[in-house]
Image (cartoon, rainbow, N blue to C red; front, side, top):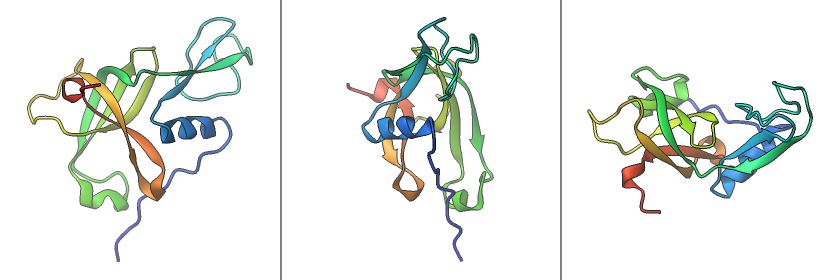
Length: 139
């Protein structure tokens, strides 16, 4: 029996992030009081405790902060995809996101590599950002 992939169930502040991904954008927050950029959607700024968080849209461009090539699936439903590459990307706007890296040449993967997000259906048809080397992007 094939295992199913875990499906994200957006709730609360996460809902707007997933809605933006459906439209092909990465949403992030910035505090209108102190300028902090929280690493994930919140109701309160982790720096100054203000609730004046403003949603902004990322360009989807950034650099690889670190990466790992998974040779064992993180969950049984991903067994048919190993090996796959997970990257922490520092977006140009100062937010760090975790996602898959696709379509790169073996041996070319490096910290500091420029990447660009593309959006694809994931488990349960939830749209997720997946990164590719920026050199492959024409827009």
